[in-house]
Length: 92
Length: 466
Image 1: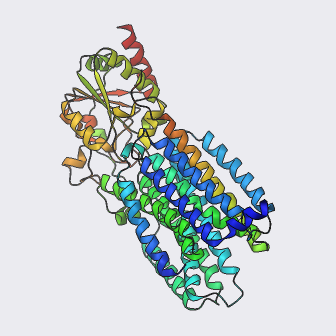
Image 2: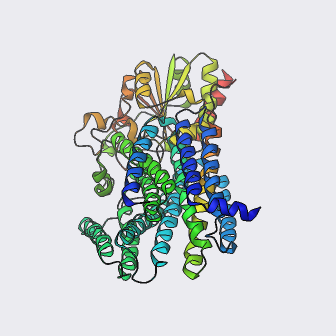
C-alpha cells in the first residue's frame, strides 16, 4: 500500500469517526472512551506479527507489545460491557 | 486442513478484506453507541471484529513461532480480565488512562521492531520517518498515561507540579522531537536518532502531563485517548495496514471530539489547559469573613417533600462518599410522594467525560432521569429545590458574575434560579480546582454539613418515618 493510499484512508476514516462520535450522547461518553480505547488495541495485530516472527528483538518487543495490547483489548471491551450493562431505562 | 487455512489466510488480498471487515464492525460498534439501548450489542460487535483480526493474523505463514504469542496472550488476558472486573466505577478514569498507556506502548514497540528488523542501512526514508512518528506518539502516550494514572490514583499529588522554565523546556522538547523525526527520515541509517527520540518522547509524556492539575484530568485523559488511536494509526501507515489506519483514525477522532467538548465545558482553550496549571496558586483568605447558614436534615426533608420538583446536581464527591445509593433511595421515596426528581449532570462532573452518568447508572438511576447540560439547565429553572451533592465548581456563580474568578465564563448550572438550594458538603473546603464558592454564603442556600452517605441515609429514614 502506498503512502498516498494510507493518507486517503486515514483522512476518510477521520471524517467517518467525527460523524459517528458526534452522535454519541454525553450519557455514554465514558463507555465510548473505554470502548474506543479497546478498538485502539487493534495494534495487537502488529504485535502478534512481531512476537511470531522469530529473532530476539521480535520476541522481546513483540511479547511486551502483545501483553500490553491484550490488556488493552480484553480489559477495554470487558469494562465497557460492565458499564453498559448498568444503563437501564425505566425501573418497574 | 490447517495448512489450507494458513494458505488462504496468508493471501494478502484475503487478509486485507478481513481487516476491512473488522474495521467495518468497529464502525458499527461506534454507531450503536448513539443509544444506551443498542450500545451493549455494539460493544460485543467491536470485540468480535477484534477477535476476527487476531485470528486471521495468527493463521498466517509469517508467524514462525507461537511460544511467545501464547504466553503473552495468556498473561495479557489474565491482567485485562482482572483489571476490568476489579475496577471500581469511581476509578474508571485511572483504568482508561492505564489502558491508553498500554495501547501506546504496544504501538511504539511495534514501530521500533519494524524499524530495526530492516537490514542495517536499508530502511527507506518514508518508513523511517513513519517509525519515528509512531514511536514518538506511542511513547508520549505511554509515559503521559502513567503519570495521569499516578495522579488520579493519588500516587503522586494531583496539584500541578510546575518549575521554572517548564513551558520553554516543553516547547523546545517538542521542536527537538519533530526535528528528530525529520532527521531520521532524511538519514535512516542513523539508528541512534530513534533511540534518542524514544528517550526524549518518554520525558515529554511526563513533562506535558505533570503540570496539569487534577481538575483538568478529564481533558488529559481524552487527549491521551486520542493519542493512543493516532499511535495505532501511524503504526498502520508504517505496516501498510488499512485496518490499523481506520481503527486508529476512529479512536483519534473520538478523543479529539471529547477533548474539545471538555475544553468547551470549562470555557478554556486546549493550550490553556495544557500549559495554564489551574489551581497551582490558590487565593487564600476571604472565606473566613463570611457566615454560612447551617440547617438540619429535617429542614432539608421539609423543603424537598413540599416541592413539585427536585433537581439533584451530583459531583464526584457524591461517589467518593459512596452516597449515590442513598441519594437514589431518597429519590425513590420522594417520587412515591409525587415529587419529580431529576439529575442535572455537568459535562465535567466526575473525573472523565460522562463519568457521573456511569456512577449514577451504577446506583440504578434510570438513564432518562440523567439530564445533560442544556436539559438540566432548563429543568433547574422550574425546580423548587436544587440539591447539590459533592459538586462545587460546576454550580459556582462566580463563573457568571465575577470576572476576577478563574472560573469566569465557564458554563455552570445557574442554581440560584431555583427557589431553594440545598448543599450537602463535608466542610467548607474548596473543590478539586481549589476555588472558593460564593454560593455557600447565599441567602437561598441551606448548608447541610457532614458525610454525604450519613446525611442521605438519615434523610431516607426521616422520609420513611413520615
